Image (cartoon, rainbow, N blue to C red; front, side):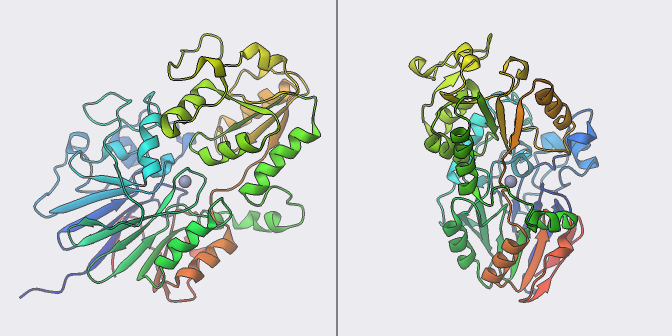
Length: 431
Ligand SMILES: [Zn+2]
């Protein structure tokens, strides 16, 4: 006698934290895991980033049958799990940093941009956690999925959809088992460059059995009133953000202006380069990242003593001295050495590192700029849907079950169209 097979979802990590979701969907002898990140908590100042340390502090999930036994010391039951695969939604570390912990024999899928950029991001071995038996700059193979094409993992089918987030090439996932359909948003927003892609993904997920949705935007209810009040004058979307950066250059024709952005937010950087009236000059390392990942050449500079990147075109180099003396021609990426900048200049911090107050490096960084009399302009745009957008996303999908993750307050996301489930860490639910 055989009992009817069921679709189960197990939640290993990233439920009530911002980032680090690790979720398994299983059906009979097939299972898939997504994502493979580490929760970002620099304030813990951990002694090391070993598997045991990360599990102990709940920065990664204690996921059985996926990690490399050489790292965990625990074997994988390949007989029980005949078909296995993993998926990574986007490049951010809270979704990708532990990808090298995945057992080498288990295929890892991601969108094509994520697959292409990851080796460049980890070129110096300081982005990902290391794989067992390899150097720190090693990146395990990632299979670049074709958008919306079914990927068969035994009884489970995956479809990867282009979405929108402040990581270049971010994707969402639709998982089908023989009897259920599940959507996992990854990180998502409606106010980026591609709301049309997001709406198409949500339409494909419509009426799914379970929507696993991020909820970063409802994590700080105490700040909600401030953000929605008329005092809030920051950019509302990516287009407004680029426009403000352009405006700032037009309003300050004779001031040194520098900026920085987050490395994986390639699209924002490309828009700033395209729209700025000033010539944008990148730090060589960033220019190299763009060359490696999207094969584009942009003007760049080196700091004294920097290693030379042989793939950068010599004719595009701008000297550091020329940038330091400039007050009208260039908008350039500053990465430190603020004492060298002109007093009275402007520095635009656009979701660059240090990311914010929660990072112990943030306050000293602000003090350094202030000490050198550089005006700090915090021009940011969230990669995450806010409360209203989350409601809109849920309305477009109308899921039978809503499962909020990746938020400090999962209970603040509601499902007017069915049930809402708030799983506990390591809990398995049967759909
Ligand atoms: Zn993200």
